[in-house]
Image (cartoon, rainbow, N blue to C red):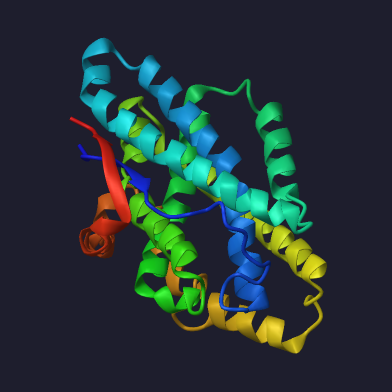
Length: 274
């Protein structure tokens, strides 16, 4: 089991920031803003999926997961709230959050599906966010020039995503989730998640007026497709998910623990799974 701490981040998100908040770089700002736009609805879905899965377990097994799920829910609820504030600033700048609208329609259309399907989708997306989180912690230069409060927001979020990477996966195993469905849904999530984020990134760039600039796409290629870029550099760990004996703990989470130790002054602990 994973001990999960719920933290209150000690930063100011009431002060506005510009559209190109990430060091003035159009692509990096648009891409990470697109990710943030997907977070509140996604994190609520993760919370609901994990809670519903917990209810479906036999009482003895439920007790084993109760505290960890409480920590998971606390962390995700905090992420949802803070990225909601982040997204509100983007909205005041005229950015339209279409990724959220598409996600809500998709969730409504699939609400009737078995709890295992929703939990498999949650575990798959959590694998993605953990890969991205670990990459961010390895490459803090992706936030070069960002205001310290925004840099802290993204690295803290990354550290906690890496920290709770096991929860949905372990619950899926506990409710007799099938390996074939796990990998099938992971393929689906891969396509949908990347298509949604890239589509929202393009919309953000269009609004910013930088969609057709060479410098924009040079930055995008460097961020995503360099040898250790966000996409190319994670390909091997993405493939790991298909192995029958895969478990998220096989991936190194030491940078998450180190960041949380080194930056303890940036947050207050408000609860812990026991």
